[in-house]
Image 1 (cartoon, rainbow, N blue to C red):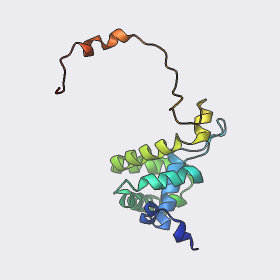
Image 2 (image 1 turned 120 degrees about the horizontal axis):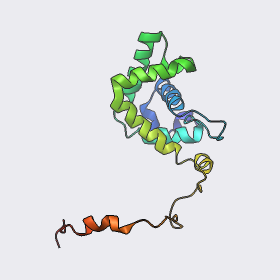
Image 3 (image 1 turned 45 degrees about the vertical axis):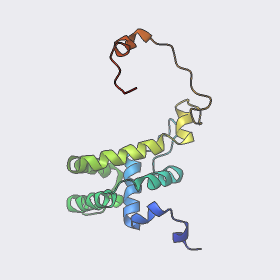
Length: 157
């Protein structure tokens, strides 16, 4: 079977070049950390989740192409070919021009990253869903809700 037969439908929206740009982009936004023993966002397991979720972003292809064009204009090479020390300044410039696109992409990348078992364990959290076991919460000051309780009902009965 060819590689294309194993692709998830949302993967097919990106060319190989765009996929590589996205991979380097998310690794630049969320790099690996040896101290905490966590991978970068381009880790195959994490990146496959990012790819699957990125199908929600209708502007992704255009944003990745814009990032590569900006990189070629300013540094004469595609973003994915930049040296690591040149990537962050390029992303800062891209952020000035395409802030909503970069924010949306960072939101998806960080959600996928913090769902990874290795990342959760490094934070001292159980690598599991919060339910059915739930988490223990400290009791707070319930009187803080008194003003909400005193409001009139906001729905129909």
